[in-house]
Image (cartoon, rainbow, N blue to C red):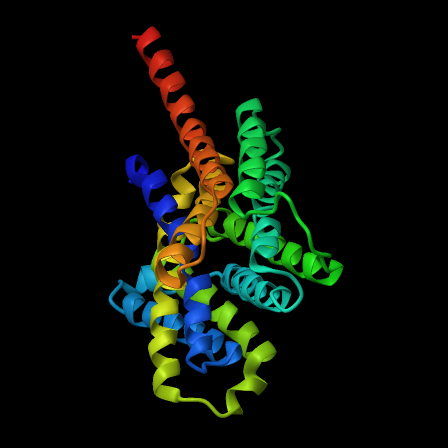
Length: 299
């Protein structure tokens, strides 16, 4: 499983880049943000409930109640991520919000370093620098000609903070739990928070059938696939590598916005996407090459 960990975490990060376009498409068909978020997390939770029902009782149940509620509580970070990001879009352009969301890269590495009491490597620091430069280019923020709302920046930064915590929690809490059990508990925690925040919007007039359609689609790309990938494979990655790979979410957002929404992509955006991909590759490739060289030297 460790052999394919980086690939599946990358696919999970890419999957996270799709819902932004889906939210816009659903909104264009009259689906309210609150309804879409509630259905997204509800469908994901039901999926994990059904999937975990096929597990043996020993893997499905969590005897340690404290651990169970810690995992549920950690899932609320996903609800905060989506809530803060949606709210920020009322104040700042999508490009600005995306740039602030990418601050989760260095935030997650700081969290990882603090929790594990280990300084980030020079390679990680170098890669973060490339990611941040590529982020600014990929979102078309150079040059910037409009006034940016501090409220919007603050909300999108809070979304990045919550996303960084999600990355940390999926790899650091409930490591002895089966991934499906962990995903079920985390999605339940996220659902509870979303209902508390957005539940009042469920009574606004809208098409339930259309909402269910978009809820199912966004649930797969925003929750089911990435959460399963992160829960199964994030613990198998070296410390700090997961946050770097998660930066693939941004180029994914740009690419899918181009194909699904026909949004224009400039040359600087292409360069920025390329820089982020290069940073992800070298961050994973160099440690592997160094390990192989060390292994060959000792043998």
